[in-house]
Length: 394
Image 1 (cartoon, rainbow, N blue to C red):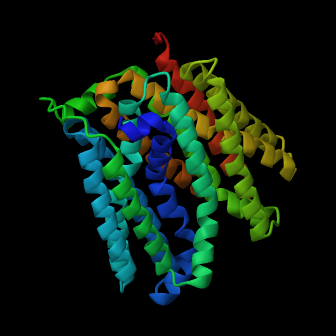
Image 2 (cartoon, one colour):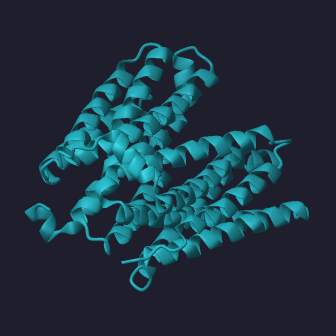
Image 3 (cartoon, rainbow, N blue to C red):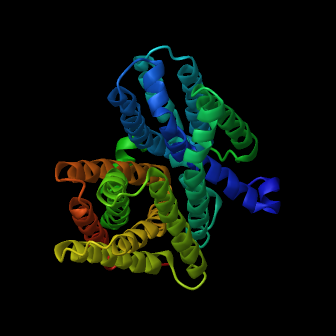
């Protein structure tokens, strides 16, 4: 750790949080601009929405590559390469003249940004002790959720006063300053120069049943939240007659619940281990899912009851994510990049799968399919920890 960070480790936490926020900012700030982009390019909304899908695909693929490469060649070098790609791709987004060009540059932007999302977590393993890791990840998640909460509003304000390219200009400045800060502040440990490569690292992670427990627990929890994101606007606006503004407040309320639960988790880490808290939070997730299935099966139509169940389920996703990654990094310190990359990529893949399943069974804007998919996700999140039986904590 650099002398500056030895004096103020909080600066390092802020830097790593800024890096992990690349993904949420690149997605959530961009959402309010979709209709305007469709008008400017004289294209369909579906074609513009495809830029979101393409970005998620690029993010997932990039994570699978940067993680194992950083285990062999070092985090900082790969981080600089990825951020340079992100900056160049963002310039391309600013000057894109056709929707096809924007789609291509969004793909490249995601591939570059994946380095920040994955390697910021792996750097936590490199720069902090095992006891500090879950606390740092929890704090990073809180900061990231605050960014997620603010990003759509910031994007809407930029659209109101500037052209939609103003969003990408902001991201360009943000990424350039982040790259300079990371280059000057993150230490450069010597590359491990291991004889083992990407395949060996993946085999090591995938052959560890404890790793599967933590990755699946995190993925199912995250996937259930994506089921909520996919269906909730239709459920509350069209089925319960919320206004778009009321729905925005509700969405913000759920993000706030993540911050609250993650803060509780961070404080509880002073007394309990990340593994103990992961089991508790997974049990809460399962209970919230079963509750949502219960009110669906017995046809309780009260919107307050629905909001309560969703608040609890969504609220614990941050704690489950932080504790899962912390346990995973502690379990596989030599494959921290591979493990974190695979875990985060899996969570996005699970989000896409469960989101698709909800859409298949979504009828008349009723919350039934959303609630049942969340119930299954919460149950599998809890059951996944069965693979961790017999784990001995240090």
